[in-house]
Amino acid sequence: MAKLKTAYVCSSCGNQSAKWLGKCPQCGEWNTFNEEVTGNSQQSHIPGIASVAPTLLHEIAPLDKERIVLKDSELNRVLGDGLVPGSVILFTGEPGIGKSTLMLQIALQFPGKKVLYVSGEESPQQIKSRADRLKKANENIYILPETNVEAIIEHIQKTDPDLLIIDSIQTLQSSKLDSAPGTISQIRECANDITLVAKRKSIPTFLIGHITKDGQIAGPKVLEHMVDVVLAFEGDRNHIYRIIRSSKNRFGPSNEMGIYQMEENGLKVVENPSSILLSHNEENLSGIAISASMEGIRPLLIETQALVSTAAYGTPQRSATGFDTKRLNMLLAVLEKRCGFKIQLKDVFLNITGGIKPEDTGIDLSIVAAILSSGIDIAIPSTYCFAGEIGLSGEIRAVRSVAARIKEAEKMGFTTIFLSKYNDEDSLKGKKIKIVRLAKAQDLVTHLFR
Ligand code: TYD
Ligand code: MG
Image (cartoon, rainbow, N blue to C red; front, side, top):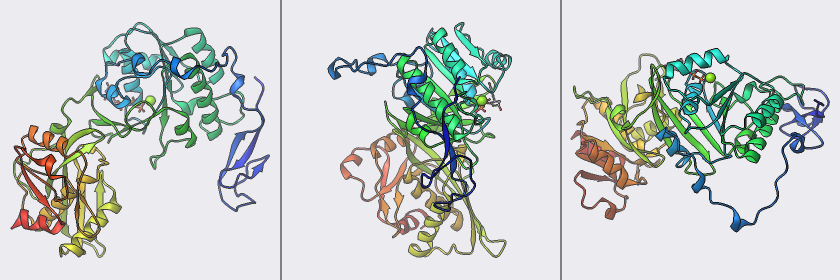
């Protein structure tokens, strides 16, 4: 195949060069040169794919009628009630988290149709042995160990699958470019070609993507713009729980999440996540508080644990698992300044159980309660839960979806919920659970520990 004309372009100022440079002579930035295709766009280069004609808006069939409902209830919900034909989904996560496992599971349970699983990472034998381990069967899965994108497209045309899985986008290589697989230009070129075929042939497609150590998708940001849905698979490899989260979704809610459990024979959907994230504090230990959180549109009870102790070294340590350390520092400053709680010379450790990273700021109140409880060494009754965001002046702000949080808390047997005074009173009427409404963080001390 003919090579495309490429040049190295500075991602900071757009300066072009025939060869790679470490430092841009125009803007002085380092490591900004990437290989880019110049001149003619590559869109018309795919053989056998005709261009589409315009359609009248009112003649276009609505999406929802055609959605493919998967067996996997969590993925269905995260996608917004099923898979849209022709949608391209970027599925990212750290190595070993279970991306290939989940995708193979989806392929094995795909409602009766043909699946093409392209693997640039594992041999067909490895995939076969994983499929045996998952103990599910689908006679219509084709495994293609190929990395050349032109060859893959040829096979897509021949096989005409109903679902396409690419494992992973970083291993693909287009013969139009000289650069190695995994480089920005290769990733972009290959993703562009695959996306184009998926759209034209209306094949729902999952692109598995690696992420780098600092949590970025390895490859250009433009990959996220190209696809319809971006899903991230998170969790601690040493924990059994895995969380799938959508950060972009053109066909459904974004910020939606689903929870799985990694077992001997694959990933199992967790039906009642609130119950697994609570450790049932039977010994009544101090430093534990439960947050009535919302993750996406789903209420979730999350246990927050804090340990406050006298600093062993000169500089106190602050460390958090599953929570932003900067936000922890902010909450500590509020406690120090607004509640008169002397914490400056203390080590503070924070842990969100289950290895999850909540995104709801309504977890603040529970974190502050856990820190106070550990600092004062008085346990919080295990039937209390909290939901509120803390502001810089120590005010407790209202949270969204209070009714859903209360309902989940009642379902899980909680007797008291602490909320912001500013939550709409009407939505709190007629509840079984006792509702304590607070205005400021210091009110928490009065209510809990006096
Ligand atoms: P994998 O899907 O290969 O991860 P990724 O594609 O994201 O790199 O997952 C690998 C891990 O999952 C591996 O450490 C083994 C574990 N695993 C199970 O615990 N149970 C199973 O049934 C399978 C297939 C894998
Ligand atoms: Mg893999």
